Image (tube, rainbow, N blue to C red; front, side, top):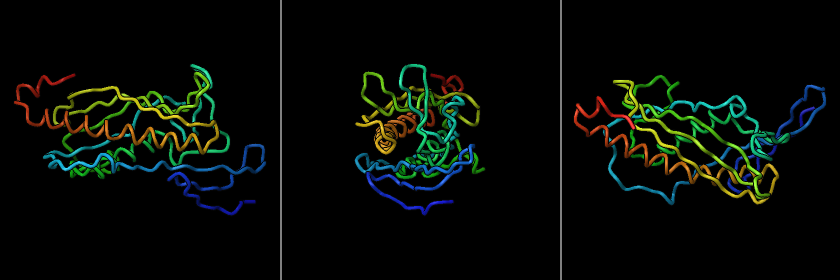
Length: 217
């Protein structure tokens, strides 16, 4: 029997308690987490850019392409929280947060996810390498590692690529602490990604046509 749901807002996280049926037929509850963006400390007064951006869903391994929250107790070993989920599979969740970060920053006036079917001058593609709680050294930390690639859609060539990473202490191994640490890491990572993308897009947009033909980093 499904249990009553309750929305909790502790630590700025959206938490939805629901019921699920296990394959065994037994019922158990789990929490659904949705990290929230807070980019107020990185507000920009710069002018808007003349180009538009599409954000693709990050590519990841099958172990990360899931709504389960991953834990790495030792290098090369991945487990998951039995009582917690993301609101969307990690790549989709990250893509939606990236779009929201650009919308909040507001310098890129036209930004949307690729599957929205809109046009754009540049495409931001992400290879998501790590999105898990790591327990190395006994201290649980949320770790995000990715490689960003900016494509010129008119030539389908790479304008630039860059590796980015962010992490945050969880303080405890429980799911709620893990989700809060991911939120902190995401809010550290997003301003870096936005700044890099805008700098590379502006540089390429204003470059001579001959340089654009050979642009690759």
